[in-house]
Length: 193
Image (cartoon, rainbow, N blue to C red; front, side, top):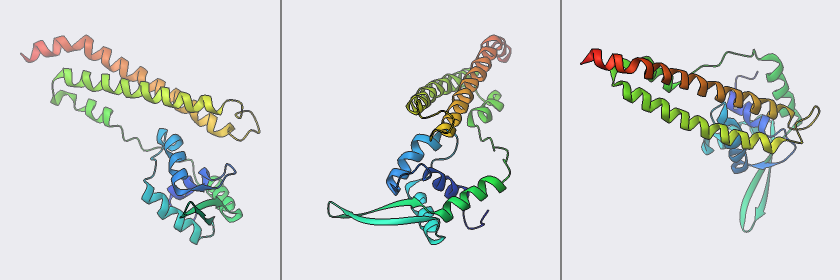
């Protein structure tokens, strides 16, 4: 893996492997629809920084054209970009994800506030999980028909299925924690009076 290309650069290369040329704005849209479920969706400024870096390394091709009086640049992955992405895929260890889970952090120190605050946080989280399950479910459905073996969206479909299972498991864990707080909450509150 090149030391000059961060993981976000490889993510952008990956977003360009579906056979179309995209503007920076379209890459951001694709990142927001896909990456946000399991990786940080890069900011617009970060996308343009990475596209410049990728172009300097010859990993993407930038094509400018005029569109209604304004210059528009679209990007496509080059054969060198395909090779670099393949090397990164083949040579980089899987890596263990770093879990930065604000709900778990707050639950860990839940004793520092009223039990009702922890319950409220878990209810809020369950609503967020429901929304994520709905949104990712729509993404997954949009891939149907192009998700079989050898189809272009086979691997994105696997990621969407994984994400749906992950969010469903998170909801199960949050409900279990909430049930546990509900079972012990009255006793804890009475003991502190």
